[in-house]
Image 1 (cartoon, helix red, strand yellow):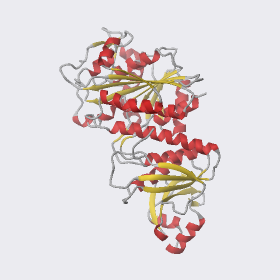
Image 2 (cartoon, helix red, strand yellow):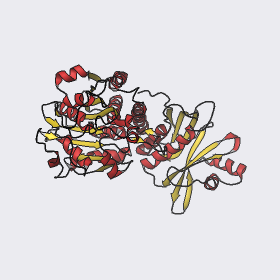
Image 3 (cartoon, one colour):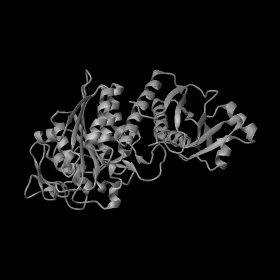
Image 4 (cartoon, helix red, strand yellow):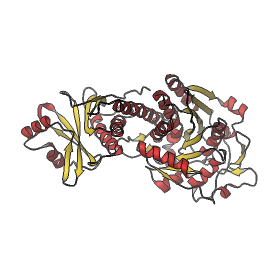
Length: 496
């Protein structure tokens, strides 16, 4: 998977003679902060030239062992060293991921006549730590459109681990990071450039390169096959909806994972029009679709032995004379009827159609990913995604994958009082409940479209899918690509 502007990355057993900008760490110990990753000869050269050691200079410049805190130390012969805090000395993969990301993001912003070369020396040895450092560096190098800095063109990761496991960890990091960056690119595209038809077109080269099967339903095919939810949501826009299906079926795969992504390319709220301020970032409402498509491509490129069937439900939710109305009764794919409670609760309608279609594939597990509810953001904030499932075994499986990937998910319940809120007098169920527990009610609605016997989980990524603030660690401003790393880690764990 080729992402424009993504740097190359290689492994090296030592810091080379011309490392470009060198990244080293400042770690916290019981005896105080210590520098890690700086070669002894270079450290002595700095001390001789500057009269004190690099760690002391870094602290004088405001550096610390706090994870992600970065300062630049200029040294002899034009050397520049970025000292980044890595937290406690017994580092976790996520600590190193954050530190490497923060350091490379700083370097990417520095002016130069050509992209920077960066050597990262953080004493990485374990495969998961190597993967974390590589992912952090690659993700930290990402920018949407070229900024004021020169960017990063080449990365070297120093590790003394010369075994195959180190190379495998790097390959996994490269594929995963490329997929995250692809999702970020799509989320960052404005709504006038990314709409259902153009999104489906962008998927074609990705599917071809990853050797994925591809099927696309246009509006006529959606009407023919009875996708009432997708058609209703997309009915208010001149840009007609699409349903995209990707398939990956390697020989010998025993586990079948189905992924479903919400792809509302712009959400104005329909006839339940959003206020202007709340509408501004709604180009990101297709982040779930971006995540499942990008993750599927990465899984295929890694050659993981797991079958994956992915559906992305794409529509633009706008008000017009042809828009669907509150109180409309919709016939969903599969025949279930739904009374529309709020035209700004559109995501669950397109997802319902796609969930039924995905369930027909008889998968071992169904996971849907969606920027579904503001209620989830109220509950968990902007950096934690919600996870809801009908059983704890499935939830634990995904939470383990998220922990391995370094993404934050928190399990929320589907409480007994949620389904009764969806009762309707004119349809099989209503799409919305009352104002309380909106994320739980939305999950209860989605669960109605997956057979009870099929393991299923719902990931509500409304909070962390788009960073409206300043960049931090390896997370840029704008689209974050959240969910991709967890899905790839899950597929890696389930592959036989």
